[in-house]
Length: 143
Image (cartoon, rainbow, N blue to C red; front, side, top):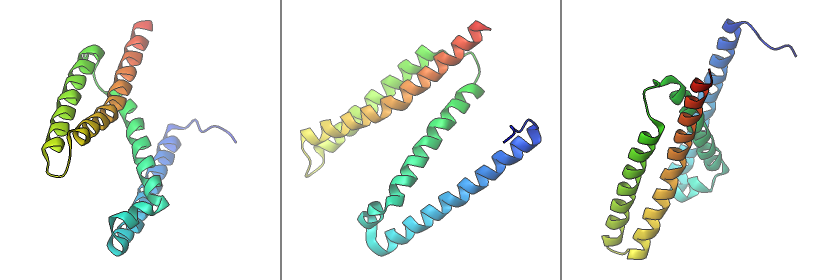
């Protein structure tokens, strides 16, 4: 196969892929919606399409992050952004952990576990964005 060099064809190919992805996502959501209505939330989550949907959404989000970082201006400091994001994640994790622990039927251990899970889940994208920003900044210094 020959590599496509015409930018118009490349753009059209990307638009076609986007349309196929949208149709696929709507189909998956339709099937999951049907399972939700007929079998409830647990029945919907038992469907393997649930895992496919979650996985493709997470991957799509991470791929979009790199485009967003390339699109933003050079004036953003990676360390400052990391510090602000870490402070916000820690505060939100502590607050949610606290509110879970004082909710009827839950213990302090449940609050700590929920806060810890949110902290870890929040750290992954923040560290990834920091990595992308420092990589981009280093590329600009190399030029």
